[in-house]
Every structure is written in structure tokens, then in C-alpha cells.
Image (tube, rainbow over the protein chains, first blue to last red):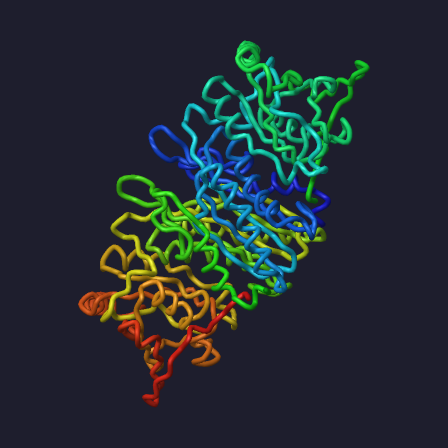
Length: 298
Length: 298
């Protein structure tokens, strides 16, 4: 059977079922980060992300931006769990005919964003591959009380996003700002029930929250904040790599959030009972059931 | 300038020079593992290794053995620092036409060795690549007093290896036993000055210890323990992927080691002043200076 038959998420489900972990693993495969026992007050977060030429960036892309993106996607995963990124190791697969200048620029892109987010590059590996490929594994830390997973959404919760969606294809996917500051503001000041970063598209990533939380949701198309570069509302709904945060919190907490910080966060819908599935309410009032489509590798 | 011009180790040196780390990083890029502040008695070890089709295994290799190797190489790096492997994340790059059965077997190979070494697979990433590629990042732990790096070799030290060298091309590179038990026996009972796992070939990996420790070495060809599968003495000296441990300790400690455990460890030479470089003494008594050749990606 070809993997396309069960798809990327079928494959992930299969892996999740096979893996066993010991009690020091608070959360194993299936969230934005793994959550590991660390010390009395904190957990350690552990995540990895690979980007490759032809999938996550085009061949002649500016190497500064490629390096930046390789690091930024992992920082975004740490933020999605409410944590602070700390350390990473970087594996680079390079074609034999690569230029030292390109590698230098790529590395500069990595180091620049690492400096801003105070992430230490502590190791790596080099290999010969026929396409430029970068895999970053990152460690972060989060206070136990501030950990947020995909699985905590509750019926009645308000669904919010940071920033504006869409425009990733126009270049945002290379220049996005990982939302560590926003995530920390949220977890330090509010009780956030569930959170994820939008990497596969709003609808698909919301469906990950719904699946993990065993809930449904209603999303209002007209409430979705569009980025000026967004080609269409469709892009904001289904295209991946916005790297904004999608999160849920109680009505009271949502009210408090919007009164404390009226810009930068948008309400887009509400968590409902599982049996309603994921319903998208169009601007004309029409409802349609979404099945979680978005970006998939297979 | 093409990267072949400065080579894999030139590239690594370049990266090491550009990277800055904060004081919580005890050892950054350049050893078998990064060493991070952890708790009062222990450090955390962090390492990553990529294996790819056509470089680290052939196209139609048994997927069980590919999965096993992907994990084993990282376990070996943790062992080389004296530590115990604990957690890993696994990034798999798969061609679009891969079969689910292949992925299942590969995963089984990973899980089987993880079970033996009590390593938790806690997360991962999937990507579409045109060649099968697996990158594993692993976390381990080591008591502060038991940490061993490449940089501690001292003039007069005895140089030892575990097991027998060569034979990796005949298949040992897919079936090797990561030397965690041996490493733990060594660090818990002896003062080991420097250690590395032999992944690029005995001579090249010894030259990494010499460079980090600012010393020279004399190695006696006739003392090198040959694996029965080894095609030649040349293979034992220069071929990569033995994944045995290469370590140095004082004469007194070496004597104590061999009296306590007369098999499983072999003396192959001695650490000398830096100005002697790396000298290989042939069976006929001839001496030649080695410049550290072995496996290189670029």
C-alpha cells in the first residue's frame, strides 16, 4: 500500500499507536512539542521540523531567509505550547556543488533569528543530499501552569487567532514573526485551554485541536482577519504557513483579553459539541461542514 | 567557492566560529554531543544525526536495519560522552511512492532498539523528499563527574578502543551495538580523559581527539584489534562506522582497567606531545605521519 493512500496524518496516527513512552514523558508524539519532565516547576519542550527545497522554499530563494525559516518554524512550535525556546541542533543536507557563501548566508539567517529569540545553536550534523534540506530540533521550557496543548478546548470556548491570515505564499512564510511574545502574554495572563500554530492552514489546524479535544467548532468566515497580501479568503482558510497562533479560552477570559488588548487578537468562532463537526458559516449565512483539508505532504 | 574546497570539517570549523552560546551551554558545537546545564548533579546531552539513502545505506536495504541504524548512531554519540540516552525526535523524509509496509518496518526497527536502550520516541516530523532520509535528535543525561569530552586527553595517556575494528562495510554499520554499557562501565569505574565514538574511521576520529586536546599520538598498527569481517587493516584504520569507543586514560587507570576487565578493551597507542602529530607505527617498525583521513561528506 502506498503512503498516499493513508496520507500524512494517517501515517502519524499509525506512528502514535506504535510508540510507547515511560512516565517521564508528559506528552509524546502528536502535539506541537513533546513535553518532558524537567524540574519542580517546569517542563521541557522538544520539537523538530524539516524544511526542504522544492517544498518549503524554492531553489534560488535567498539563503538568509531559508536559514531564518528553518529556525522560525521550530520557535513557533515552542510558542504554541506556551514555552520559551532555548537550544537547538541543526542538521543540514547539502548538494555537493553548494557554495560556501550560500552556507554562510544561510547560517547568518539562522544566527540572526536565534539572537533575537535568545536561542542557542549547540550542535548539528552535515550530510550530502541532492536537495538543500534543513532539520532543526529545538528545546524549550515552560512553567507547568503555563503549558498549553491541543487537547484542552472545551464546549463554549471562544476561538481566537493572533495577527492576520493569508499571504504566506506571497512571502510571509519566509518572514513571519514566531509568536513567542504573544503566547507568553496569553499564558501568563489568561487561562488558555488549547493552542496550536497555524502551519497547515487554519481549518486543518483547527481540526487538529477539535480531534485532540473531542469537540466541534463553528467558525465565521467574515470574522477571519485577512492579511493585506492574502490572495483570497480561501488562502486564509486553507493555505499553510501563517504561523499565527490559534487558541481557545472561556467567554469570560476572551472578554478580559479583548478589553486588556483590543488589537492583535481576533475572535473567529466558538467550540461546540463534537457532533456538529467543524462548521464554517459563510458571509451569506450558509453553513458548510469542513473535513479539515489543508496542506499535506502525502 | 564550492564547499568541497574547504571540506566537511572546514565547514564545521566555520560554523563553530560563528556560533555564540550563553553560559548555560557547557559545550556547544564540536563534540559528540552538546552539553547543557540540567540540574545539580547532571548535565543534559543533545545530539543529532542524519542518515540518507545512497550514503549511509543502499536503496533496497532492509528497512528494519535502516530504522535501527538511524537510532543507534545517536545512542552511540550519547555513549561517547559517558551518558545515558533518554528521548528522541525523528524526522523522516520519504519519497512520494513509499509503501506503508516499508515505513512500518523502519519504525519497528527504531522501536526495537529504543526498547532495548530505554529511549522514548517522543515526536517527529514527516516530509516529502526524493530519497529516504532520517534525522534523529536525541537527549541524554550524564552525571557531571562522568562527563567525557574529546578535549581531555593528556600526554602519557594510554589510547584504547572497545571491540574490534573493520567490517562495517560487510554489514556491521547496520548491526553494531552502541557501546552504552561499556561507556557507563568506563566512566563509573575509571577516570576517562577523552572519548569519541568511531564514526569516521579510527585515524580520523583519533585526530579529532588530538585536535581538541592539543596533543599528538602514536598508534601501533599491530595492536589494532581486527574484526573477523574486516576486509583489511586499512579498513580498520580508515573506514567509518565502527561505532566502537576510542578513549584515553592514564597509565595507572589503564592498568587497572585491564586487570579488572581483560577482554573487550584493547590498548592501541599512547598520547604524546602535539609536535609529534599522529604517528602510525607499522608492523615492520616503520613510522608514518597521518593527517587524519577518513570518511568525509564533502
